[in-house]
Length: 177
Image (cartoon, rainbow, N blue to C red):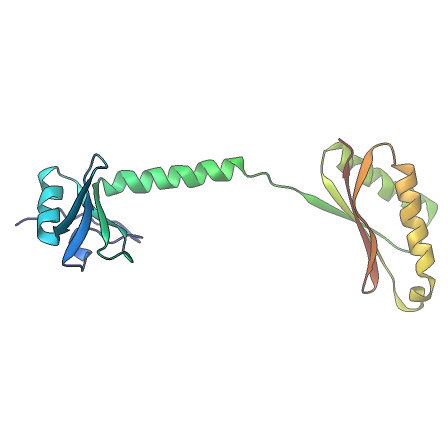
């Protein structure tokens, strides 16, 4: 008996001679269940139609095997993965850092950068880090966040309110849709 042997790198499934079971639950190339068949009979059927015998469910008793073109199966799986990747929405989270003792000009420059990110429909994480004795004046940090929210109130939606996390305050905003 001659069995078709194809070499596929990194097989996820056992196929043809790699199947160790004595009997298998066979599904033919049309998808119709044949029933429990001896492994040699299953390989003969696969060879007769020039296809592979692929172990689909190895943990079942007896294992489920299907007669199909393994190369085509791998190709279709790769297509599905590529299609799923295309449909994924990548969300960019931009970060702008402020400090409690920020000057008015620096504040306006950073605020304009936040406006640019919002106009580009990106989420923005605004953070304010305290250093040393600045921790005694947390209220100044929260006032800066209130000022940002007030100045951008017409164009933003606050997704995460300003919260203290360790030595910094963070807030996440996005475009108001």
